[in-house]
Amino acid sequence: MMPSKDPHRPTALLRNNGQLIIFLCARISSAMAYQMLSVAVGWHIYALTGSPLYLGLVGLAQFFPMFLLTLIVGHVADRYERRMVLRVCQFVQGAGVAVLAAGSLAGWLNGDSILGIVLVIGGARAFENPTTQALLPNLVSLDVFPRAVAWSSSSFQTAVIIGPALGGLLYALHPPVCYLTIVGMFAGAGLLISLIHVDKPREESKPADLRSLFAGIAFIRANPAILGAVSLDLFAVLLGGATALLPIYARDILSVGPWGLGLLRSAPAVGALIMSIGLAHRPPRSRIGRSMFVAVIIFGMATILFAVSTSLILSLISLAVLGAADVISVVIRQSLVQIGTPDAMRGRVAAVNSMFIGTSNQLGEFESGLTAAWFGVVPAALIGGVGSIIVALAWMRLFPQLLHIDKAQA
Image (cartoon, rainbow, N blue to C red):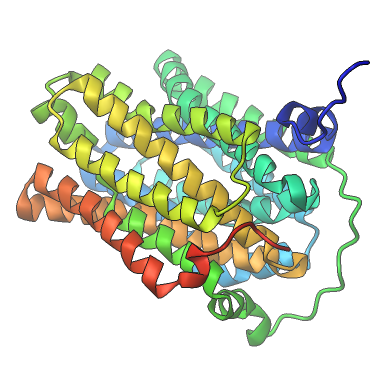
């Protein structure tokens, strides 16, 4: 007798859900395009201006729309058809990059015009991320949702690894070629999203008012486990942003030069990719609250190990462990937030969650740079690692509901 096939195996999840495969392909195409764009814009604006300040302003232009539009973004993701919102986002981003390609060919681009275009693209990105998070639960059953999150994370990490290298290669070949390739990838993502079919009917949305706009924040505040999960990520990553110091480690501590910096930047994504594939095969099934705290503590310990390392190999290993631990936390947090949120609220809750993540990443880099200027590079990285562990221990006491969660519940 042939052994029965397990419908919950990760390969079965992909084989039996063509909609999820289309979603993952669209996510890879869009994320890779954005990673390529980040490299191309960085090189381009620095070549035009020669100013490190403009590099910092690029990051601010990407973050500013997300911070300002959080409440509106969430309401749009819940009120309007999510696939339509995502198609518009891909179109706006592709159009913005097409302007960069035209300006590069014609030679009229300058630092300020690039920042203006990046600001528009950042606005579209602000709508895309929460809507993507809110759409995923509509494509799979909730019992396999953690596996779907792991596959989604795998697709994103693949884009993080491949995108920057491909973007740098194409930009070195010819900047307009790089930009036009990115336009094609955004267009491809939009086409793939058009092929997704969602059988679940949308609930009737209420008209926009202040109560509706702030409903995502109110929902998170009223659910201690979700509040604890979201805020744990905010403060742990805020303190543990040692990756912002990688250029200094590569040049002054490890003495490996630009090639070594590229390896160091890739190491967290490699660790995250390996772990996310593992989680797609064996997602956390029980004691997920405890597992999340353990992952954050391991994240802090890996940061400490990286801080004191003077060996490239040891630094790469510690960064890979850091990335793997972060993915465990991400998969559990997204599963808790999305499964525990009613579908009609998912866009608004995802928007607040995305704002927390963006804040922690951007301010985490600022915090690392500031503490490095005050105390030195190694002490700054050590402070970040120790701080992440302290936050995890403190959150265990502040949010016991999160610590004792066994599995995500709808």
